[in-house]
Amino acid sequence: MGILIGLGLLAIGFYFMSQNIYFTTNVYPYWWRGIAADASVFVLTGGMVSLFFLPRREKALGWILIGMGALLIFFGSRAVLNPTSLWQFCLSLGCFVGGYQLFNTGRLNI
Image 1: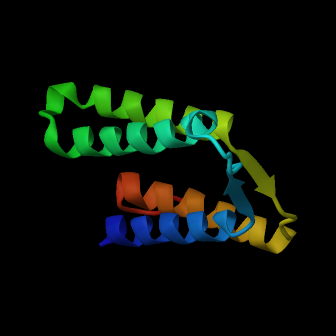
Image 2: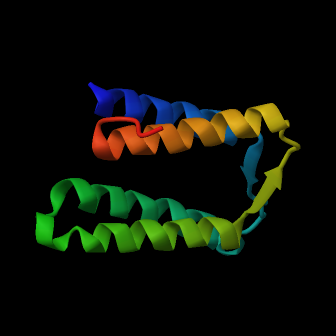
């Protein structure tokens, strides 16, 4: 039960933190200028598919592809960080920490 609550708290913390972060890409008239955005979608999709369908000993390839896709997102796009209130930051950080602890151990050590 604690693991499910921890997963829920992690999701809530991610939701509160991600409300003020936007990723934008530039629209180009030619297809070869937006290759980083296209490649990031393909690499992330390949990583997710390999995590689900490859055997356990080969799942490292999926994590490598997801990491490469995340790097391509940051190189090919622009992150816009809107101001976050202290209350929202503390709430999301508390949900992250408590959720991670519940998810890993099944109990909250206070």
